[in-house]
Length: 210
Image (cartoon, rainbow, N blue to C red):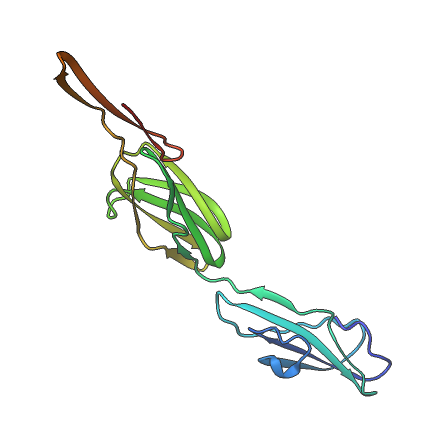
C-alpha cells in the first residue's frame, strides 16, 4: 500500500528476485512499474516463478518533487513444489531390537510424510505415518527387530504438487553376545571359567563378567 505521496505525483515500483537487493536497485533481478499511484492505493502484481525457491521483493517510490523512498524492509516467500527428502543422520541410535529412523524434508514447504522399513526393499514390512510436516528434520522409532540383522528404510512425502522419496538407507541392529564356559583341572581342582557379555540397549556398553 502507498502510505504517502509527499504531496506530489508519485510513481511506484516493486523490485523482486532470488537475491535480496535491499535498497540497491541494481542488485534486484526484476521490477514492475505500477505507474502513478495515489495515497492508500493497494498494489498487487502477478509474476512468474519456479518451485522450491525463495524470492524477495521490496517496494520503491519516487515523486515529481524528486523525493524517493523504500518500504521499511524486504519481504520474502518460498514457492511450493513436490517434496524433496533425504535420510538425515540415518538410523541412530540403534539397539539390538529397536532403532530410530531419521529423515529430513528439504524442499516442498510442507508434505505428508511416511517412513517405510523392513528387510526387503521390494516389499516393505513396516510403515510409520508421521502426518503433515514442514521443511526440517523428523524421526520415528521402531521396535521388535532381530539382533544382528540388516534392515532398510526409506522416507516418502506427498503434497498438492507431487511426491518424493529419499534414498534407501541400510542399518544393522546390535548383536547380543552369548555366554561361554570352559572346564578343566588345576592342581587337582576342577576349574570352570565363565564369560558372559551383557549389552546395554541404551548405550551399547559391553560389560564382561569372569
